[in-house]
Image (cartoon, rainbow, N blue to C red; front, side, top):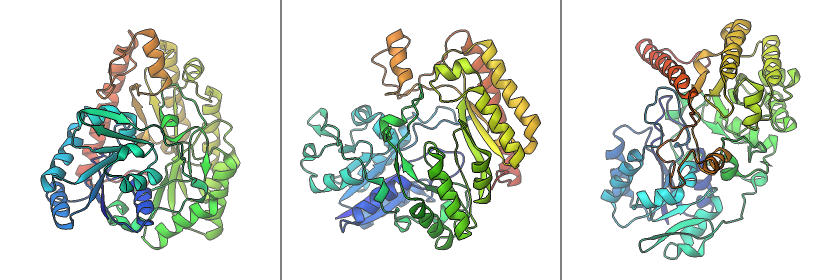
Length: 448
């Protein structure tokens, strides 16, 4: 069977993002002797013409359609990624090229809003919920009877039905690395850290506003450090990658695993730059020094607040002392660091706003150029389905029970809403100026 996997528009101003999820699914399909290709809308000039040409000429039996980016929001990208029109547009071109092809949707964005997407995008025939490696192959065996497959949304006349959770978690410990030849990797090589490597799945944290555990579970499933670095080495030596991004929810939980990866990179003397999301709780100077020796270009951190009351309200595993301790460590190690914050959060006051700004200003003074302002994002706290924040707001009556959250809803109680509007507006303006400046003078990010 011929299967074309299409990555939907990521709508990212930062450049293309390698379709790692599709690569894992494509690898699993290929192992069952199917003929597989990946088409990334974001990297192909004349994308709609090329998409139609590919479908018409190759005549796939099934098209997998991955929607991953409704969950990402960056300053300056107005309208957010909740806009469904780019998703619908690609589906219309696919149907124009081959009206009778089966379209199977998936991806993080799809899984968060699966039933709503099925209702609003009738061109989707079947939807795979959460991890797709096992389920997609089962769908290929039951295209005319998708209800037999656990873990899918499907249609019965005008009804959208769910077959029930699969309960077949991927054995990620023994999972093979994704086949990077299924898509042309060259367009991603020009964009630092656009090629992802996954060392584990799952997240043990319980942050109030996050829906990641709904998608990947709360139990960690880790690959062996040797297998991870085998994949990195292949990307460097076979494909010419100079940088990668470890895409785990938190790279350094547990520390033994992340430090084992760093040690293996050092042992092989691999010359590669990388970054990852680091959790500041109990961060060790030893692990930061090890990460630097292994090629880490900067730490990416997202504490979301710098005030202890707000951090508790968010159910973060952090305190302000952890943030300050991290700044002291990276100063001693001479390691760059970037930060993400949300505002406003539950429990915000003028004091907590001051604490966030004080942390940013004080850290910039301490670290200088190593406090990466190009990586500083301050964004509104968006409410996602299946998050504890959403459940809390439903109980409080501050969000309508019938709201599907596809059109963005933000946590912005009075009077913090007006302070947030001014702050975010300033950040967005600075972000746009930076983007224009970079385009005018062809300037890459400071860490590249």
